[in-house]
Length: 119
Image 1 (cartoon, rainbow, N blue to C red):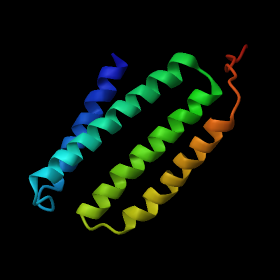
Image 2 (cartoon, one colour; image 1 turned 180 degrees about the vertical axis):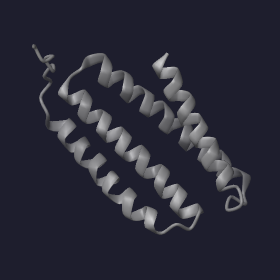
Image 3 (tube, helix red, strand yellow; image 1 turned 45 degrees about the vertical axis):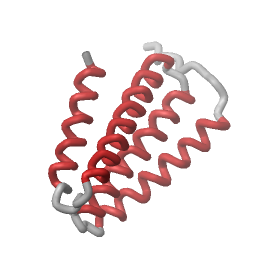
Image 4 (cartoon, rainbow, N blue to C red; image 1 turned 90 degrees about the vertical axis):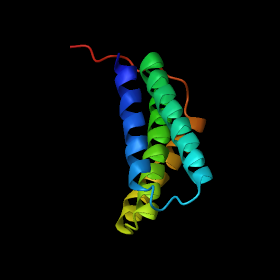
């Protein structure tokens, strides 16, 4: 149920972004590319969500930070470019660096299961 709600939220945000930028997208092929890119990001974020909460490992959490950092950075970059909002790039770049840093840590981290806190 949670994954369904997350998927619907991502689809809503994708179509909202496309409706805001339809003036800037003069070529229909750009809309198709944007839909493909958005669909791929939705698939990766849901996959990262399932991987992180399915395995509960440190590596899975780094993968989640990697995917969500890159996806949110791409959304902000697209919105900033098509809506001519330059300040959005200052927000998206640190998220992109966070995502890339998480990818590096994910590739070198050991596979350890996170133990629940015992009270």
